Every structure is written in C-alpha cells, then in structure tokens.
Length: 77
Ligand code: F3S
Image (cartoon, rainbow, N blue to C red; front, side, top):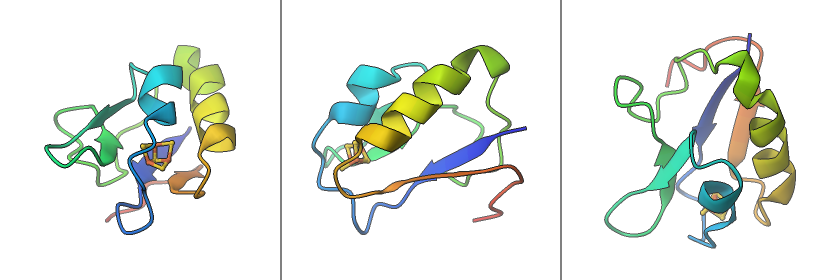
C-alpha cells in the first residue's frame, strides 16, 4: 500500500505535482499543494489506488523541494 501527503512548510507552489498527478494532488487557496482525496485532508492516511502509483512516483521525483512524502504505511498526520 502507498500513502502520501504534502509538506506545506517546504512546498513552494511550483505546480509540478498537480500537473503530473492531477488525480492525487491539488492546490489550496494559497497555491500550496495537498492531497486531493476529500476524506484525507492531506493527512496521509488514504491508501493510494494502485493505478496511480506511476503518477505518485513521478510527482514525488519531480518535486523540486522534496515536499511530497510517500510511505508504505499511513502517516497519521
Ligand atoms: Fe509544492 Fe512540490 Fe507540488 S513544491 S506544488 S509539492 S511539486
């Protein structure tokens, strides 16, 4: 299983993640990224569907500030 959240303290709102993985990430009112799944609230506790693993990896690799956190277990943020 895969889980993800965005560290908003280091996100610089570059916009790469939402372009790469629009089904996972979106932006808040300040342009900072967050996990899109409504029930998740960027807490990193929602299991990412397997068909989005490639997007997840690409977004994680593409973030210039390493703000996209990915793990095999829930973050419980
Ligand atoms: Fe922020 Fe990185 Fe996305 S800087 S907008 S989390 S690609």
